[in-house]
Length: 185
Image (cartoon, rainbow, N blue to C red):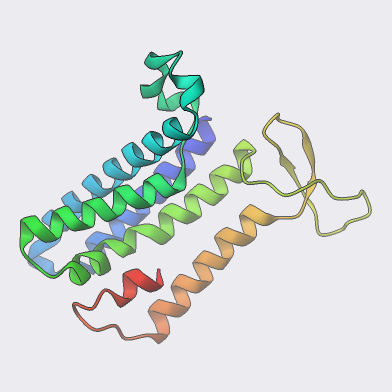
């Protein structure tokens, strides 16, 4: 779990840096604050959705609900937490929702890349084991820790996100307040 947390933390730090990098010069502080709130709400949302999906387990162990270090996060809850943070920032700052979504969208690609690489190391979101003759497989664990040659799903997903983000940033010019960047991200 330590390497998984480290990679997600690195992705989150790079995402906050990206938000600060693209923020208007005199507003960097509030954008960084919004990114940190966004990360907190994403963590809360991801844990809440996971606990809801596994309620039969957690109803008997209510103290484990708050032990995120034991694992158990769900990406739909993280996405919902991010959306709630976008709505809150738009309401508090009284600026268009699309502008906030676009500004905080810079957080998403580094965080997703860190998550995919963390999954690769911790044995989640893995592909099926390949036959021994498959040259394209890489050693990766499954949930039980069994190391086997597998299709490189997680590293390819991380590379795809990186390439997509680079291509989108390099080739597209986004309207200032439209929310198009966030929608495409």
